[in-house]
Length: 338
Image 1 (cartoon, rainbow, N blue to C red):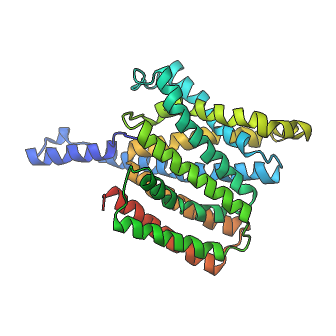
Image 2: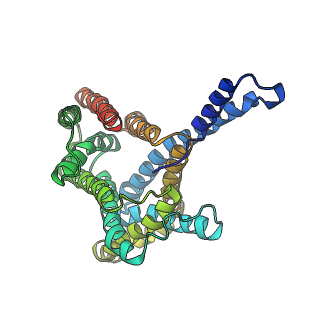
Image 3: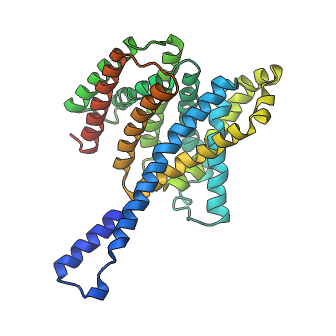
């Protein structure tokens, strides 16, 4: 998601001024302005680090503790809120213009974006379903395995051939994940298979986005405006046949009313997660977003072990450290095209 970097632009402007010679005292930028910039950037990063894990914990509570075990509908809450809020911000409050409106015709929307939206919906639904069988910490470990599926999918479709360094990082990720899985105290085959489906869907989403939407550079809010309604359509459309009949017959639809605050929190956090990503990229860069995402997953795994009762064995911890290290290397090699 392309976005400007206000902090770096400010720094570059300052460097140019230095080259032109000393400034008059009245023309010098106030010392507090740069401090304020850094504080705002720090605040946005902090929000990003908090809202994602908060959504995961809330959704797991809905799925497991409340007993509303319908991942399609639970995932759909966040996409529905993103669709509604992005529409309001763009169409009602006019916070941004639609830069790709001329290119996103109805035939293009149905032929290309509907397919990408389906893969996105599958990734989110399977990802939430994994929490029905696995601990939060173990799911975060398995998420580090995603680059393996992405590289395999890109290679199989002929879009990209990984370098030796990237291939080595991917192999090491496999080893680290295997060690972590062997050390998992609450290993569940069904949960692991579901997470593999989630990661396959995520890799498919990335490949389809690269193949079908390569000429479109959506700002984050505009991307939500187009994609969130599609994801909501897929999630609630499939849920109408797969989940809703069971929810009606078992009386589970009474649970959202009984736990209205929790479901509303999931609704709001679903949108805030996407907005936080947009703000981080806007203030820093997409690279920082990836680094924060890795740190966030690691922090959530530790938080789950310390405060939510998830058990992390020494073997599992070693495997996760290996995964984190080579996941970082993978991202470094990809970003620097090494």
